[in-house]
Image 1 (cartoon, rainbow, N blue to C red):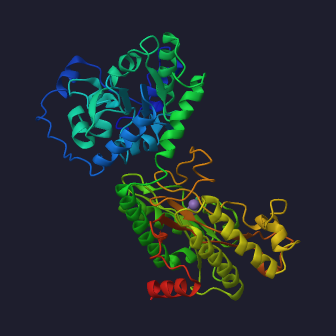
Image 2: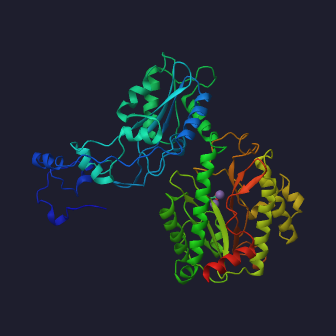
Image 3: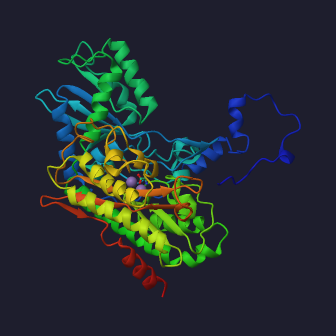
Length: 518
Ligand code: GLY
Ligand code: MN
Ligand code: MN
């Protein structure tokens, strides 16, 4: 971190004046305060070069998404915050990532744009008019330009102007300082209801609450919803459900995310010798994949799971500090998030030596067969829950065959049984998109009980996990975890495995590893 002139204890004046604790965050800074400095640093700059901005290819699609949301909330003002910067420690922030609903409705991705708020204002003649409230680039004669480490151009680079934002998104842009008045207009007596996507920006939520309280308004006309929390939940649900069926642009982005992820898996295999040689081989795998994600996309869509041997039985093993041992398998669950923020979510369980042992292959094949059974039913008209049921039939049958179930497979599959879930406690599928677990706030009858439609994208990811201290399974199974996860697009004809280019069958995985390590 830049700190050009740190104040060390040796530099401190011997008689320090009393100082408020809150101000001590500036202890290390010796920014000059003189009028001469201010006049000098704010002058002598060439005219700003225009930012190299072009309209987003997503813009026509985001307009259609906003129209769909508009139709669901006639007359209401809809507030969709990008979110605020979030502190990692003291005065350093996490890299910014906008809320997915904001990114979906504006097309902005990567780190754009802290504190921005999309507002759909109800129009007099019906429908809505979209305005993006942003904090534009500050002029060079402001302190923000050189002194603000969170927003200043000297510190974080030039941010887009209001015109730039409009060029890129196709949405009218206004200064975020206008947000309060714009939100409050006609709320309450004027008949306008204010709804906010909660969970993105606590400051914007507090602002909305304050405006509602002033106006005595917390209801949606025409519904029996009475609490402000409940009406906001309707909007949260709507923006989540809007993503259940992906449009053509989203599907293209998902393909890019999957392709970049597959290339990342190949990079990991090329680095397997380095992983087995290192005391923290899992970190070699994690950092190889994550470097690839930063180079080829925005970042990873979730923390990479790099689990050697027994660690694979910990479903979300992200500490990744273990060894990668010869004779064992390594489970890699990882996804590249592209700049538009769509992410893949793929898992392969690889033999470290390039060849599965007999026991590993038996377990691997059972999981693969469960996945294939799930693919067979993931077609338009089926229910989302049928995918899991198909996978579980195979898993229960294999566990029965191996003598591991205390009951028959049929008894285990009944709601009163479910003993087979001891070895696969997670679900088989989740929707996938901008959030790795996408559309999570959708209603149950559209998600778990929902009917599959072309354009839906989700994972199929059965697994079997035998912990090393599981006394119910024979010794040879203990310490083995296998998951196979692919990303699936429902098509008019059936489905497409978007990640089919990454080998799945045990012999294909072996041949692929051999080809990369030659
Ligand atoms: N990587 C998290 C999951 O598979 O759902
Ligand atoms: Mn997943
Ligand atoms: Mn996964």
